Amino acid sequence: MARMKFLCDADRCIECNACVTACKNEHEVPWGINRRRVVTINDGKPGERSVSMACMHCTDAPCAAVCPVNCFYTTADGVVLHSKDLCIGCGYCFYACPFGAPQYPKVGNFGSRGKMDKCTFCAGGPEADGSREEYEKYGANRLAEGKLPLCAEMCSTKSLLAGDGEIIAQIYKERVMKRGYGSGAWGWKTAYRETIES
Amino acid sequence: MASLGRFIRLTVGACAFLLVIAASVPCKAQQVNPTASSVNEQQLLQELNRIQGRVSIPDQRSGVLEQPAGRDWREFRNVTLRWIGGITIIGMIAVLVIFYLTRGMVRLESGRSGRTIVRFSAFERFVHWMTATCFIVLAISGLNITFGRPLLLPLVGFEAFSEWSQWAKYAHNYLSFPFTIGVALIFLMWIAGNIPNKVDIDWLKRGGGIVGHDHPPAYRFNAGQKAIYWIVVIGGGAVAVTGYELMFPFYLSGIEGMQLAQIVHSIVAVLFIAAMLGHIYIGTIGMEGAFDAMGTGDVDLNWAKEHHSLWVEEEQAKGHAPSGGTSRPVAAE
Image 1 (tube, one colour):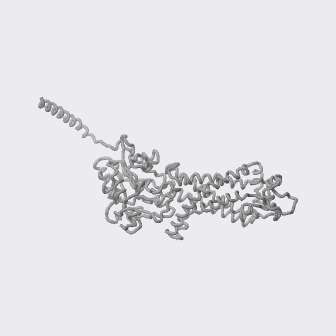
Image 2 (cartoon, rainbow over the protein chains, first blue to last red):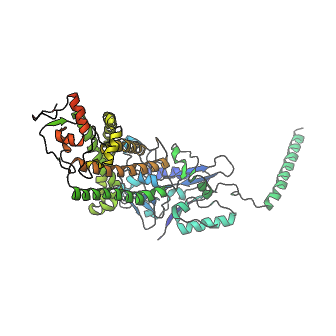
Image 3 (cartoon, helix red, strand yellow):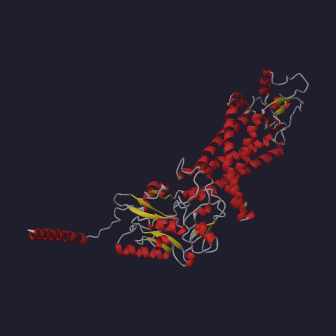
């Protein structure tokens, strides 16, 4: 089985936000929620880099560890998913997440928050693959159709890679060797406790 | 003339092109590394323990790219808090059980006189019980968040536990409002009797009458009750402020502030629960005649004399209480 991961090659990201738009459209993500976003560091200064970030589907995921109702589960592909039927909207995953992935549809309203929403690696949720209920709660299940996450699939510069960790790490290593530089796999050390030697 | 102009333009253009080529040749020789000056993830994390940038989407808070501080918070929430909470609450229950088995109920040494004295008005009792019922629901629903997953979830299953936890969360959020009002009213209506004074030192030195069979004098509130008062006011204030910070995310602070708020909220809460267990014990099975104060509002005169002798004298001087000499039962005001 594959171990699915995201890798954003910050030296190629041009902050076009196509991944953000693709994600919102593919899953019909509600207003105010962005499962993926592009953060530009040192904006307008020398050394500026943009990183596309979503849920990193961490190894030993902090969100799953702190959830009071244990609504998270990890698929055989290493994708961290959650059940919106079990989620109580307490906000604990959102305190624990290093990447700001969990978000809630309701703001204020005496803290009722609503069910947590986050990137699913285009792998849906606990409902039957491709079912209407699954689509309404979690969006499309591309993985079940044999496709990879849309954000990475349609990245114009192929900066964002999604797929088996070993394969995308190999692609990134080859790139770094060929061009002679690379600012590293952003978030990997935090998410997977490992980094790509280059 | 037109052809001359075109010739000049062409010549200038060709010269400029050659110049560009010539300039680029030495550059090709030396390898350019665009990452030499670029931002470095580990360096940024070491500097601030978080990485922040600019986003073009409306949600500006998503500009925080990485914040590994959640790892420390996770350790607190899953390990440290469970130890602190478990030790304080089970420890308090153990102390109370041992105390009850050895000391038993603190009896009225002179028996009931049959005459009563008003201790708490209807309004005071209403505020007390409003705060108390809210506190019990808040405590159980709060403990559920910390201890429910390891203790209750395996017994009832995922669906039932989520359903219960969902309602518990709503109760926790909404009952926080009457609880906070109750704490504020308690602070205001009992502040006058709860300023520590010299009598308290003597009371504490003599073990408050709980240890041994002594009955040190006390005004309306003894040092133990004053301690409970300040635990409720300060502890209640702390859980209210930190709780609202969590209930309204980003109004007061970012994620780090909310992690800190949860740490303060939960530690104060478990200590508060342990203190209230002691309070409930002494107000019910721990002491004969004590429950009447918050039950009917009237306490037996002998109880008042044994536990709050100076207060009885004050009340008698004001004419609010039957004087010691008469044996006729006096109705409550």
